[in-house]
Amino acid sequence: MRELTNAERAMFWRARRGLKELDVFFEPFMRDHYLLLPDNEQAMVAKLIACEDPDLLTWFMGYEQPEDADLVHIIKVIHERLGSQYPN
Image 1 (cartoon, rainbow, N blue to C red):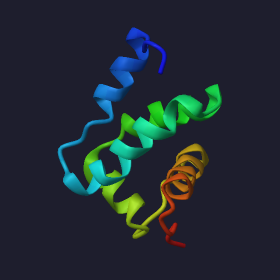
Image 2: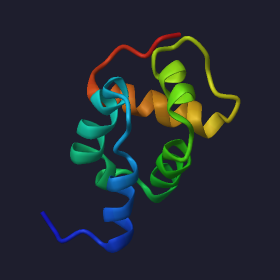
Image 3: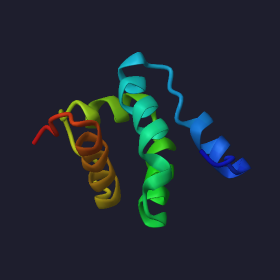
Image 4: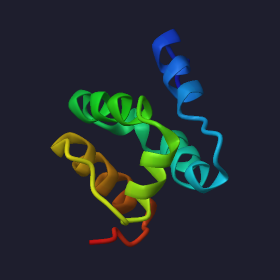
């Protein structure tokens, strides 16, 4: 694996959450898939990571969807890449 840039290191650090339920999604996704994403989807991850934990948990569990179409898209990508069922 290549050396991470400072920006990539910062992104990985910000992906660490306070809720174990979110770490189940973020940790393997960031480790195994983030660097393989195109730039536009990496930007969506940055936008997602800036959101509050309660909102993220609600969206990942499928109780609600974010209003932002980019966030809807990247949450679906995360579920698909991790092989988890994306709630409708």
